[in-house]
Length: 394
Image (tube, rainbow, N blue to C red; front, side, top):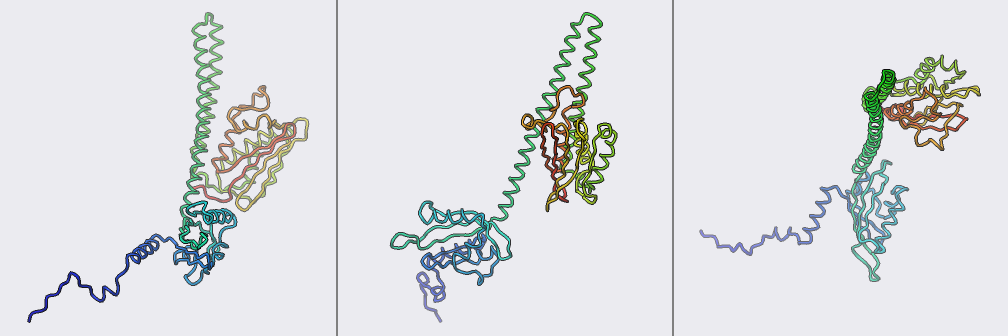
């Protein structure tokens, strides 16, 4: 039996006719799939009825099920973070007025669980009424919380690197300046030595060489100390549990002879149970430098005293070391206080090398702390050291 010949060129099955899509439907389906894959939410606001369609993805971003989110614009508006609302409404109104072609804004929105997420919100007017006023807007929601966190961390890292580069530049300048000074002095002395005609002149120049050599050695030791401190930043040696009272009291005992000679009374008002996750050696050195400075620059015409105390917040502990010594003219020296080889009490003091506060600041920063100073001439000086509580410095 022969089957009839079928012309398949123009043949369309009933199933095909039933399930075929129009070109516009195919495009809509493509867009829908693309949004689902990219996890981008879709919103569609009918301004006339004030009804808003939120896609499943928009609802999921803030933790709501499909049947939980209300269809009014106020429901979403009210969840925008209070600090972000002004820009949120301002940008949207600018788009409605035709001042900007596309509405776009980044803001925080409150999720169902009470937490906030960062949203990138975009929209565009697609329909207008007979009077030319916007009647329908379509837009998208994108969760950019992770991007914001990464951006914040990048900015933090950039700030750290910038500060480190500034300190490195300053440190390099100090090294270069001071070593050049010593080398220049050595060179001059050697030239004078070659020109010297008597043994007495040569002996005097040799004594100058010894003085310069001693000063150079002292400078190298200072620089080595600073390099050693900087190299330990982010080191696990900075993760020791240190009792603040015991640490400061140990320093006070070691300075007992100096404080007695000067008639300085030291009040240790730190709590005996205060513990900080830090580095013992650094903290002892910081206490030693600041307390010994207060003793050194005490006022002989006063009943001199030093007070050590602390202030606590939720995340930090602030250690205050204050005295009623001779003080410093901050109007004159405030920008030089923590610079290297700076002295503020006259050039006749042979016990001042001008490196103590620089080293102290370097050590405090190595412990991820902040040091500040207030002082008034003839009234006294106060230092504040602020450290994070119990944060591991990994």
